[in-house]
Length: 440
Image (cartoon, rainbow, N blue to C red):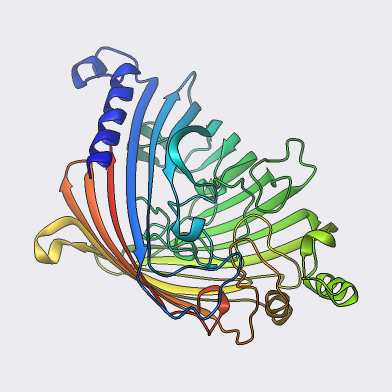
């Protein structure tokens, strides 16, 4: 807790140093500069569970890990509709088993790169231009990477630079922010959405969004990492991802809902599981897709939906599938996924700023993917050295978020993970977490 308090204090100091205007100053100065910040601390652990054997990418029982990140969101609006944003971040800590062992990893606050000492990373640096196309005017609240004001309901939005693909695609009002709602990777995003990213979850590229009435169409081009699950991104789209999304918003009983269809196409050096198995059989070694990579295409599709049922209750779901014959590249080892969940505000027990949420997810892989793992292959996150009894990964996650004070939240999170790494010989694992989040 002391670490979290210090981190939140650091954000306040950064904002003051950056010249964040007071309420009195705002009345006398142009609102062309915005400063926000956040700090999130997650303590996560799992007690003993069945683990008769382990491999290089196995989840270990009896462990507790922590992560912390402190982010500054600084923006400049040089002209109408134009925005420059920069997000330097301080990170520290490790995910369970160094963020390995479960395809639907239990903390999206844990990066694939862990360090015991704090380090600074530039996570986002991008320009956004919004072009009004008419329609009604919408009020916009000031937030991280968002200026306060208003905008046309019909508009074109162009974003270029370094940012997260999840900033634009596969969004969800109830399950998309591991700092404030669900923690599990495949609840925050569709597990099959193998989005382009470095080991911290960010990429460089360009995205376009066209809002027209109840419809939005999105498209994007992004750099993949130089090698699967790598720390370094391509710079000239030598290996790239194309993303497309169609969103339809609507009202049911006067309450908002939305459906999104998202597709991706990765083009780069990938390995086919069957080729890796054939080479291992011929040479007598372990299966390794790195030995059989060649230029090819991997594609996937997912659908997501959200619906407000009451003023306080919202439901959501996602489902998706990706090419299970080819190795995933930058996200995680999931070839098919389905999830359903809800989010409930605390008005009913006189805690309107509190939230309780629960979700259930099932993830699977193709038969050839199972054979690859059974032959000793390892994936982005999973690989127990063998897989004689494969099964789908099942997860249930529930959290309660307590609003302690303005800008400060405390959450308790529980996840039950059955068949971690698609292995019925291991688990189930009970994962408990404490999360403290502060923002301004």
